[in-house]
Image (cartoon, rainbow, N blue to C red; front, side, top):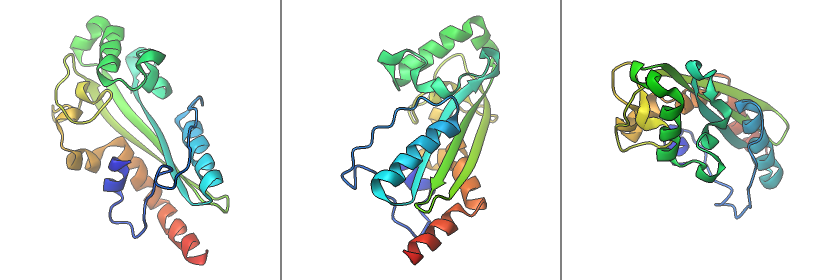
Length: 193
């Protein structure tokens, strides 16, 4: 949420989490696509809060691995290591084997959805292309960031949060929502409530 708040800091609206509202929000991400998972979370947020809800889902896609880990990125090291960055990196490098040393192509993909209580939905997608480095580097970020190499040679975990928020797949998805008029619609709906 911190990343999203930073990216959307200029919006004239207050962003709150389910926890801020005292809501129990536990949505299982079992969809086959990023959009399915994001939609499931957004619609549950609207149902529980009756407020416009922003949700997203994202993952790492490596063409050499058939675009895996993809929608299952957080579970790539096994259910017992859900979201464990170092374990995810080890599992990815193990899956790539010798190919990890050849900087295989990769991309982060994010699908964001803004669901309004009146039933309207806005969808934005963002992609960040790069390669996989054979060795982790950097202390910022999470998940696969330490082995995701950008075109300029830096690994995503070497960027400050401010730098990452300018070019990340999540920032691009949120920018796409803005282009589609999602935030204007949310502000208009809030003004008419």
